[in-house]
Image (tube, rainbow, N blue to C red; front, side, top):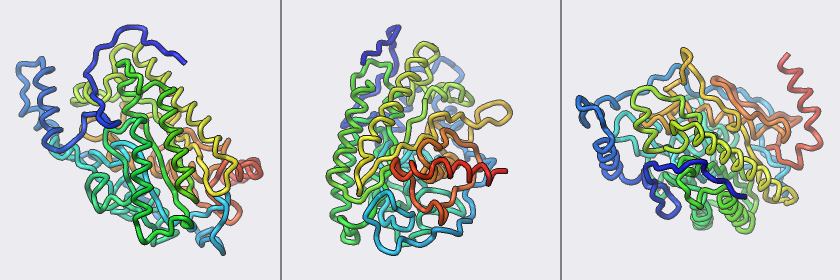
Length: 413
């Protein structure tokens, strides 16, 4: 497959180090890189670095309360005996949770109030692994799962990097691209195997993988590492490693969002920030943005194909969760709702983590062929029921898909 940029593109060079983008890093280093870029690009003689920093000092105003009550009443207990098949896996059967990905999953900027604390990783509030708050105050996949299994292992609390004591099994790295995921998988396997509280061979595990945003944000720079074929090869390597080395595992393979949607987020200093973190996706040239959109489509297509390679297995499966495919940024007053984004107009606030967690959880309990490809603010989590108690896989979806659709339609009337 060969895709060529229609015109030469010269953007901020995103340097790759060990499968990561070098926008991230330690607090001081990040601050200095932002300052240098401001000084190089500022064309307003009346603006200064001090004024810029002051403008970023903010508390993101949310117009939607995070969290929701746990209202599920059926399929609350684990299976009578530990299931032998991933296609008969109930939420309460899951003993271990883990997360792979980039800065969003790491919680980068999630609760930032200034340029200084923008690079802090609030893993304890991350959409897949965080349990710093209960689901009544912030929904995460982990905070919902704790309602089914209060002794869930691998959850995250507090702040810190992937190697911090409170990261749990959230091994996401800020700046990661597809190339870095096989390494994250090896790190995760080693962490799990060395944890004495885990019965590695027998405990059921839920692993969520979301990656590709940084690849898309740099794909117009001509880096072969971001090419859809290469991207798919890295993900396949990671999934094969999980299949071969992590028994009893359900993998959420979460579709990437088209980062060109960020182009419309232009309030405040967003144009400045976009030039640093996502120059390709927010480029003024529509031809460039169309190129990025095509890459996003090909990334998504590769995920759909990859997931089905593991359908026939009994104790391992990969399920594509597509809620980001047709996602549109919620609006307020005809403009993108800025409160979903952190200071840099790219990373997610707590509000966006909550919404993403609800959407992911709901995808997990929708059969293949009926999964939502978008979401809306304020959705409630879907509850597994006595009739449909299992996380949906390709195999267990086949026999119930049509009846599930009928049941859903009847419930909505």
